[in-house]
Length: 116
View 1 (cartoon, helix red, strand yellow):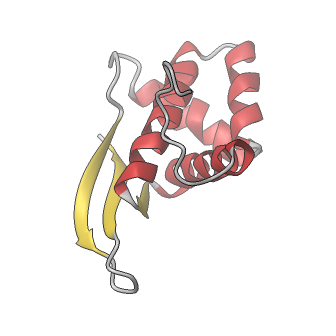
View 2 (cartoon, one colour):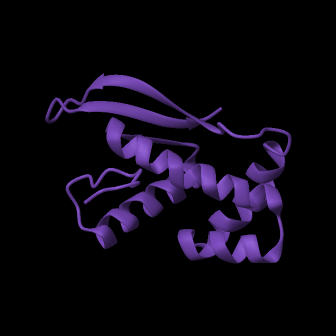
View 3 (cartoon, helix red, strand yellow):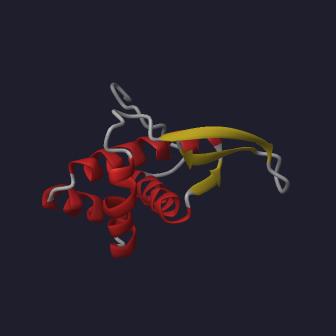
C-alpha cells in the first residue's frame, strides 16, 4: 500500500529511484538546471527543497546529511557556500518546473527544473 507516500514510484525500485533523484539533485546544484520528465522533475524538486533547507541551517550535521545525499564534496560546498545563503530569507519554493513540450526522440513530455 502507498499510504502517506508522497514520491511516485516512477516505475523503478526504491534504490534505483533514490539514485536517480539524488543524481538529478546533484546535477541541478552543479549546472543550475535539469531537463527531464515532469514526474521526475516533481520528485527531484522535493529532494532539492530539503537539501536547500539544510543548507540554510548551515551547521555541521546538516552538511553531513547533505553530503550523504549528494556524495560529492564540490556540490556540497556549492550548496552550502552559494545556494544556501542566497535563499536565507526565503521560507520555501526554491525551484520551479517549466514545461518544455515533447522530447524529440520519443515525444515524451519534458520539463526543466531550475532555481527561482
